[in-house]
Length: 439
Image (tube, rainbow, N blue to C red; front, side):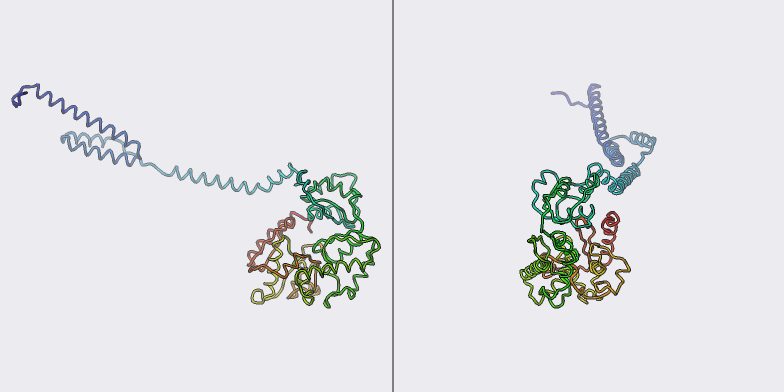
């Protein structure tokens, strides 16, 4: 065995020194690895880890080694802390740019839409859509201009948009001349095809009259005269004598009792026969809805108001509720319905949807529901089945106001507070300014 004598000469000491150097080299390598890993962390974490490593190393070193390390650290320049100002600045810049982009989008959305519409042309039905069209009878009245006819075709579903037909009409030379009367057309027609059909004498029907929902009696008589051979003066004289039509005792005119529909009469039919047929048809509608004979007048008056004020199908029942809510003193103490349609009817402007301040303040107009509280004094149009049903079955809701904000689509906003309603009125006024053809 090797000797363990402590007096062994130099070779034994060299071995010890070699072992000590190897140990110190291993320690240095370990510190280098730890320092490299620490540099990947934040500056604060790297500093803390380096100080911890140095403290651990100092425990095994002499006092001179510890002093040298402190001197080296003191001689290093101070480490700068990372600033977050740059990050916040970038974030603010991104937010500001996003806001500018969003603002530009909303600001330019209208002009961009106009440019796109100008390049693509007005909305029109395609030939594939036209192939799915169904028969429809459309009435053209004497004195109707191109804009009147365009609106009629849109209302009846014949063309897709007002501009689609009106633009083609303006581009046609010579200027088309339309004969009053009823025309057999289709729904979903391409605008140019619809124009050709109206100019084709073969599509004009004889002894046929179309009465749309909400048409006032004065206009119904005009349509009858244009669709038949009965003179307008004869129709007016016959309509003025209401006693022979079996109307409720409250009725002083035929208003409300000429059911809206498409009628075909025989040559030689008199004014009395034609008008009585329309009245009888309205009685049939009331009977089918379950309206008692004694309730005919009240139902027709309310239904005629709903018919003139409502647009979309579901809105009929909401409009019915709004007026009933206004007739409840606990909800609306003035009892004023404030319907522009009633005011317009009293002035004779049955085709307008707007009224003036003077007209709304005119107490001499008995149909003025801005001045006279309670239900309107009489019918203001000839209502159809839907309006009658809405009068009998109003929707449930707290609404006290409504306004149709788009007369093309019939979109209507219902409100409970004045503030909500005023905001909706602003939308409608802007729409009207963009569509002066609605007067």
